[in-house]
Image 1 (cartoon, one colour):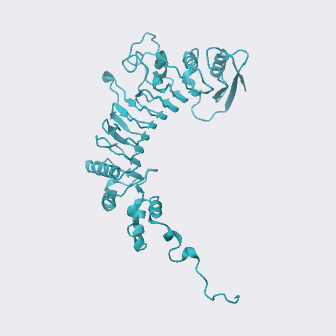
Image 2 (tube, rainbow, N blue to C red):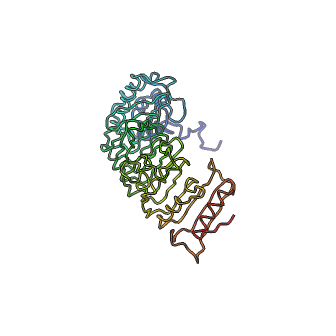
Length: 408
């Protein structure tokens, strides 16, 4: 021991009184507690006198599990959540997540309680709200409009919603809306002037052919769109701010013609899908800078829309699947290329069931013989496939008519 050195080992500052996590301000601790599931956050009240009420100021509330199929039933959560929301009062929330799991059908009382919780956290000025239901039936949300000056992002999974709920005129800050596996059977319009990002995946819409109708989507400020596996393709009003869009029409879509070989077919799908003889999807997508357009072979929506094909005046990047390259008929591909005057990159993903491709070919223009029918800016053409078979060769031969040559 050196002269003057204390015989008692000094305590590191981080472990002394007021050190470590206790040295952090209440606001920071409340933020940290928000990353814990709600029951664990509440249990911190027994740590010390200072922690007794800190859980009430947590800026994030996680009830149940929103990421895996093991959400807790409403019955199991009811007493805890009721006391939790009552004791929190109107303390503001940043993010709120509900994971509801039921091994059997939901009871009407369960649905009422979830609706009550949902509306309560909206009143707590939540900015981000997620409701993920794991059940054998849809949880029906009340057909009442959401009213919030603070809500910016809403995620719903396996719920049933109606028109009033999807009218977001009283949510002027809402920018992100994501609906997954939702029942939109009673919806004819989704409307929001503020929405910038919209995602609809595997959303159901029961179709009655003697009353054929579509959901109309009014989102004039939309920047990005993701539309995947929809039973009935919705109609989009003008989206002048759209930058990118992904649209995939699967075999489960009801948009197919029963007489595809009849050139004079006058069914409602062929003769103007929105009953007015105008575009369903392409017109709304016409201002996008980047498009992914994928369709199952028996669907008719895109090809029907091409009869009123708009000018894609901003489109620079385009990805298409083999739907656009039907053997002996490349009119759909030719049409969209001719109406894309500033297109810079074209990708064709051909005749493959999955995203992995064994063959990728790069195409380029013959600079001396550019085609006047397509964009002068087109300098990247990619063709991806599993194998270079006769179908692929026909596509390459067609592209050669635009003076595009390929290297293998």
